[in-house]
Image (cartoon, rainbow, N blue to C red):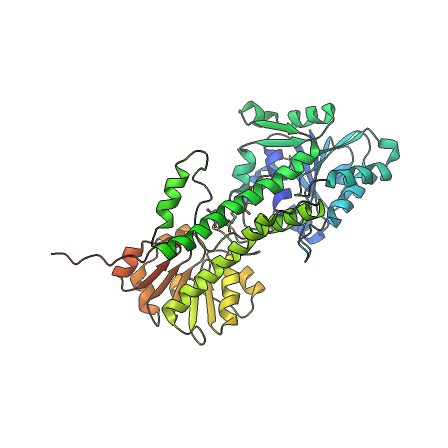
Length: 443
Ligand code: UDX
């Protein structure tokens, strides 16, 4: 099939590559000319495991191309995906200007029957506006431009894997013809047994926000429990293990730590809350989820204060700066929230990240960036593990301690072996876990 994708951001690019990989002819468009030029030269605008190789293969194989001419992505296509950004306004409301522009552009360039797909995450009810826009721009194509919602559930860091092996495919709409087009589009996945859920369009839109808000809720619930564990002496890792063994709860997203970040969970939570209010339904639980998430940063701050005493004038090293492992994305990263809180309290902050150092420094110019964890630890009174990168599990604690002004370690992701840290002479604090007792000396 001929597929157009508007928006070559994280979602758009993964959509391009995955659809090309299952045999479609895909043309990706972006309003940002420099991004399109880079992609034409096969230069990836962000770090996403496996995507560069897959992009190379699909471009070389002639299944994928990029264009800065919107007509090139729309004219003659069977399906066009809207994958543009829906950033948050200060009020929490999703900014849908780019979605409106995409709808207008698609309508202008459409040459005949076309299935238009909302993949961008949008508040429930957006489809009404998109449909009106399509009809207003092209009254001659009413009935031929059919709108569907097909939200993505891609995790950064494993987005290609998620796109190629989805847990479910959600399509919302009302036109039997459009549903049929999507079944043809996703046929290889459906034949491999991936469940297809077909709903009305508003339910599909709402399901995306509902899913992300629920994931955020699970994390905040765990972090609130972590505070309770700290107060009571219980261990969140044990509590989460017990809870997760119940299939009604499930073990995922029960990791306590510095909380959630990234471009999706915080933004979608705020947009969902805003949308609920607009619809006249108060949903205060969502604000509480966000509050508990901020509290996690304060909990880490308290631990740093506990181990270094006065933060002012101390050097603190943050290990991991991206919002989660396997990505260079620092948007809404808890590590950067902690860096800002430490700087505000007078600390000098240095960070290390396997890939996100430059991006973090762009966000926080006062942040020093080190080339490795040991360089970061130089002269630091405290090291805080902020992101659960695999590389950090293997830290040589003794080498780390040798460089530090004082051996203090706050494990913001419960990543390290606390007993080993204590054996290496560290004062060790984890999130929601009692302080480990030093191993008794051999008899
Ligand atoms: C999320 C959704 O998972 C995905 O389905 C959606 O399409 C986009 O938003 P992503 O933003 O890539 O994906 O991040 P995710 O893997 O969900 O993690 C979000 C944040 O929660 C990260 O900061 C992570 O460190 C944190 N997290 C995750 C926890 O603090 N504890 C956990 O148990 C799990």
